[in-house]
Image 1: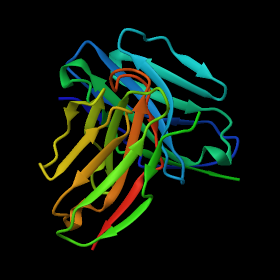
Image 2 (image 1 turned 60 degrees about the vertical axis):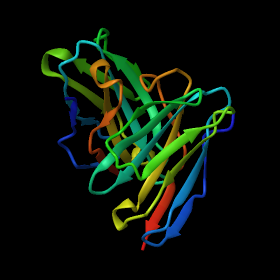
Image 3 (image 1 turned 135 degrees about the horizontal axis):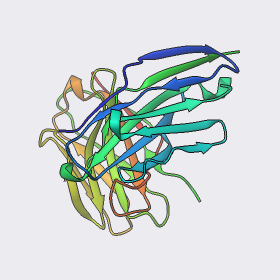
Image 4 (image 1 turned 60 degrees about the horizontal axis):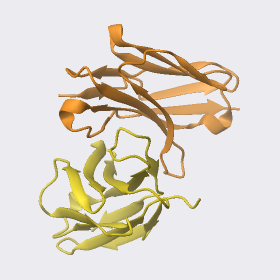
Length: 115
Length: 114
């Protein structure tokens, strides 16, 4: 059975600090997909990134970067030089082939960036 | 392109009643999924539809049902409402055939059951 753990319930930082959101997953499948979504106070989830299990290359998009490590079953998300607009709940999700690709979401990490 | 729209945005119902929620996907998207979000259970998958066919169903009782129309619009229905059905119901559409592709979420329908 697939499982996603986001151990950090809430993180509070001051603007311009770097912050890393952790995501640890469990799956028995060799084919799976990992995602990060952002949910701002407005409630609408926003897609950030998708990674498949065969692509361990890290990715950087502006101030955002993702570190995918199959050896530790982790897919961590780092925000560099955080801004107040980054304040949101961030969800990590997993879809595995054996689970008919039904996505399982972590419980989310609430990030609060203070000015 | 217009985003995913959901109607109504807010709904208050009484236990025992039924409710229908509507979702219009992004133009061109044929895959629609529904999720329930509660503080206690988090985000949980309800259904996935593609070209009017239900592809997957989450672990929810039969009171929860859905359908997709030929224009890709989707509805979900909850019958015999219970207090525990109070939640934010989110609809998402995807450019691909399955939920392995990125999903674009609507603003949700906040359902309160009293």
